[in-house]
Image (cartoon, rainbow, N blue to C red; front, side, top):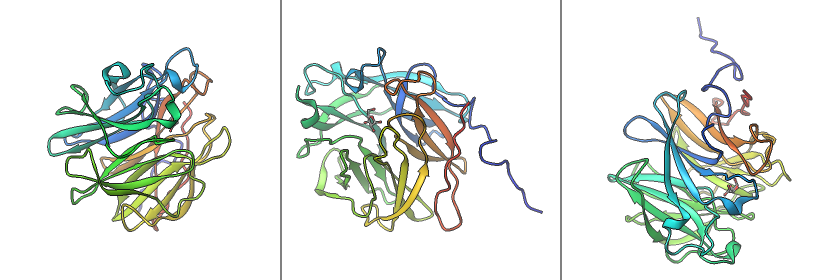
Length: 299
Ligand code: FUB
């Protein structure tokens, strides 16, 4: 006898999608930390929906069961960043990593008025996952055009890797012990097809996965590649999230109590591409490690 399970699309992740409904949220980076809870670090879309320039703060959400979510409140805003763009705004897709008792919150933010050419990756730290973050400056030696969407992956051996990129180029490199410097140099991630932005790296059964948003106009999908090493080279494997109805797509992947999940955003509540909301759906794999197309739970 085998357990057929409940078909994808019939299973409820939570109270239905979108899951985060206290504020408009986008670009979810999900992590299960040592306290057993799942935390989502998200961008906060602001009303009026004028565009990505108005985004100037981040919230964290937590859950003990993937069903009930608590908005833990704001953890950082552009006013807290002494080195940041004088006019503020542009706090784009963040990520968080944990090492040796410290949570490192990574966020892309321009350092000058000429926002698209002055991106830097800022780092704020705390000894708690959802509060107490203090900005520590930015990662030295990097900066410039479309250096957005940082993702930090900490491998089982404790080595940490950073990825970022927009405008068609994804770069990766190893972080130093301080989690705020790059060991050696960043290098282009090879083997990705049609990379746009939103890199995310995770490991399953010894295989590394790099997921990202592609360039389909006004309807980005999510694609992925796999590799034997956290910095590639990567083998392109396909599309696993079809358009959500939102002009941008940005996702992360986490395992919680033996089940894998995809976190992403859509515009189901507002019907506006700049007022997005975080969604969660099951992420399932084939025997050979390939990712099945995600069935988007709409409500
Ligand atoms: O939320 C601002 C930007 O839109 C992100 O950095 C991109 O990944 C896209 O979701």
